[in-house]
Length: 153
Ligand SMILES: [Zn+2]
Image (cartoon, rainbow, N blue to C red):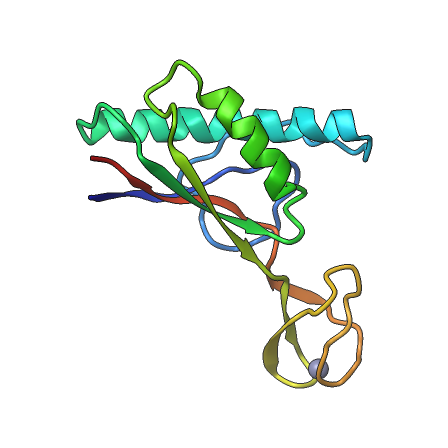
């Protein structure tokens, strides 16, 4: 059984994307790139995911969560491996314990005004339209961090 969470968006820092966030959880952004700070950041994201999942499962009348499906943008500032590691720690002792964390990595997609088209960036660090090589101004996706659905027994 798949319990759909109404696209819970975990928001941290500034989020310029347009879709309405139904569920906001403030997470303090980390600006440092030091590994320890990074892991702290992933741990806070993991704790939020676990809490969202546990609440949604409880509302659905489930006593356990088997899996979480999340989408992580290439510019979300979250390292998937670090999140997996933190997730196991964060889930301990909750009804999310032992759940699989299924991560869908989302590439950065831009909209180019010159080409009038959307394109995925091969390199998220370089904001250049892959079609016309002009600087890309609009990001369509790539910064999201969303809990999409849960699997419950
Ligand atoms: Zn272009």
